[in-house]
Image 1 (cartoon, helix red, strand yellow):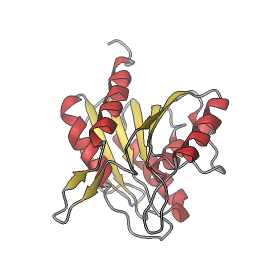
Image 2 (cartoon, one colour):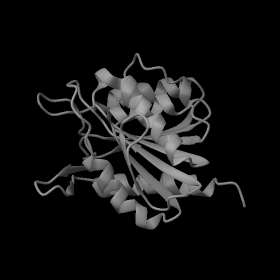
Image 3 (cartoon, helix red, strand yellow):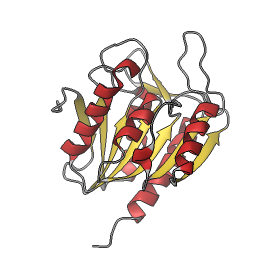
Image 4 (spheres, helix red, strand yellow):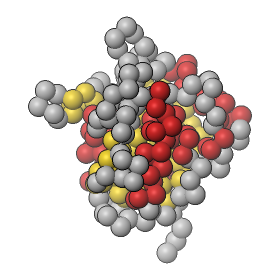
Length: 217
């Protein structure tokens, strides 16, 4: 599905769900055409069968670059509004953490789950006020020449800045995990990285919490 912003959206699960999980990808410096995230695709494939009442929406940015962060934010906002669920949980991987924090003020958003999220020190986090923030980060994550990464110390600083604003949440280090949950194999299928199932288990816990907080009736 092409969004009003020009980005692409694909949804797994019920088309008219009252609650949705909107997933936004990472990026890089170069202004390249957006792609589907192997990490998010693997995670959705793993979790969606266990949560049949939730719509899982993955966003493919027009351009996946932090130099086009405003565009990526517009793409995520367009996805939330197009899905139109009454309740939304955002999952942001890497740069998607910054994107999710920028659209968290949307009325339907209740929870933001950051997977190795990029929260640069200049990023305003006011949109997270009144939301729950759960951060998961691999202990072995770091930037290396030619290899993308976000240090746990960086996401921890962002998390503590959010906590100073009164944001409720939790921060968890996944021992032995690297940057991401999966890589795309040569035939296109996502292949899980070390500790991928730990990431999935912890995200599943947040999804159960999210479902349990739905208003009765």
